[in-house]
Length: 143
Image (cartoon, rainbow, N blue to C red; front, side):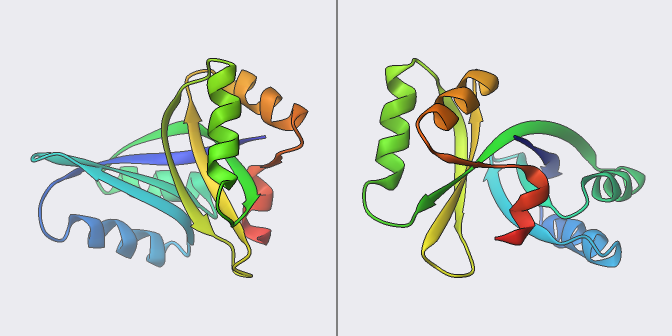
């Protein structure tokens, strides 16, 4: 139920992000979700991609520092209160959300939330126990 996420450290300068997308495009790797956080000196690009190993290899071969992080993908109805219900559930169990990002599915009526928890296995167990659709990495592309 965990999803492999690429974490790429980027110098905060023009063209560096385009270099990543060029390399992935050339390797025929599709980006499904992304998040970019920055400081004045560097950024962390987080990606969910169609082929983790190919992306990791291609980026490392071209001098990028790349890591693997386990995250959790959750599908909810895209309506007011959907995120709050999940966050409240996690709060009650003392599970911390270290970061998250989201995207809307192609049909437009569902949202997929990508979570990094401090206690990933307990977070997954809690979500499943409460009937929340936790999406396996290989199913993320079917949405």
